[in-house]
Amino acid sequence: MSVWLSLGVVLAVAAVVVVALPFLRRPGITAAEDRLGEPDELERRRLELAEERDRALAALKELEFDHRTGKVSDEDYRELVGPLRRRAAEALRALEPRSGEAEAKVHARG
Image (tube, rainbow, N blue to C red; front, side, top):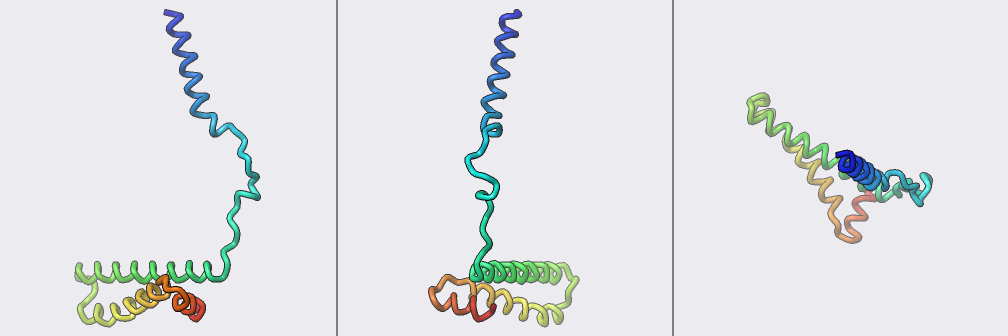
C-alpha cells in the first residue's frame, strides 16, 4: 500500500510541476519590451470613430427597446431616431476601408 501511495504522490508532484512550469519560467522579453506603442494619429482617429459608432448603435438599440416597451412615444421615437441613425451612419462610412476616400474622411473629421 505504501508503494502505491508513494507512486501517487510522485505522480501528483510531477503533474503539478508540468502544469506550473510555463508560469515559473522567466520570460525572454522584459516588461519594457512587452508594452504596446502609442497609436499614431490615424489609429487614434479610427478608435474614436469606432467608439462613436458603438455609442450610436447602443443608443439606437436602447431607443428601440424603450419604444417597444412603451417608455417612448411614437412621436418622441420619430424625433430621436433620425439623428442617432445619422451619427451611426457617418461613423460607419468614415470607417469603411475604401483607400483614399476613407482616409480623407478620417482626417477631415479629426
